[in-house]
Image 1 (cartoon, rainbow, N blue to C red):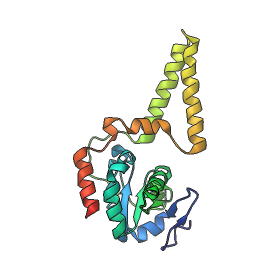
Image 2 (cartoon, helix red, strand yellow):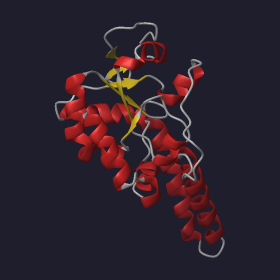
Image 3 (cartoon, rainbow, N blue to C red):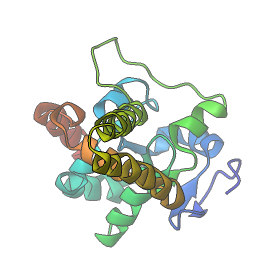
Image 4 (cartoon, helix red, strand yellow):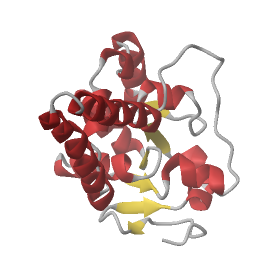
Length: 200
């Protein structure tokens, strides 16, 4: 979709309605922005005014998101657009219309738009960094253990195969698993405050 188009989003390559960064920037005041990244990613910088609802908490947030969607357009955001497209599909399956930001926060920054950076706080690493650490550690473990027990190399091969599949399908099972860890989930108090704000 052409990011200069300021009106109705159109289905993009993700199969859900998309809105380009420039159009989203022009309409930011009228959109309800929902960031579905992990707490660490959100804390590292997000669209101004974005509400934080991690993808793993989407079902819990559904009633509040339904209320927000009745008041105006929901713009769902992640780092690249893959998780936000998944969130939009899940919302659509529950009767809630939502649009994904083309290219996510990465595309937003590439178009020259600023992210809001909250006051510095100790936050988990961004998900892509966590995935790289976990994948690299598992591959090294498989290779080192494989020196004594060759069958352990299957671990390294499995991780490599998972990374190839991740690239081909634009999904990441490892990120989903890591996203369920306690430090990657929003605190109950934070989530409840966000849901209250969405309900207005």
